[in-house]
Length: 55
Image 1 (cartoon, rainbow, N blue to C red):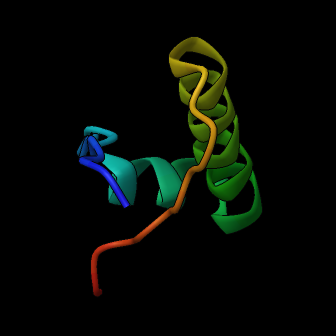
Image 2: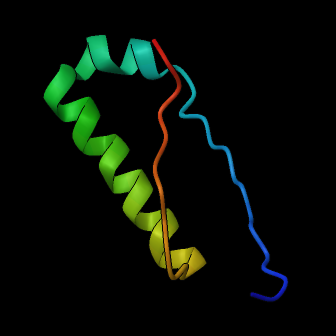
């Protein structure tokens, strides 16, 4: 197997906890999923693995 490139990107939704309390958990999760889908579309990656920070 040859050399492979791995890219790691971290994003943070500012005030995500406050957003969850303001919108409710379901709507905040939907907003996060929309954010993730937009990133996937813009980056155009072949493989994508989500990892969420521990709470």
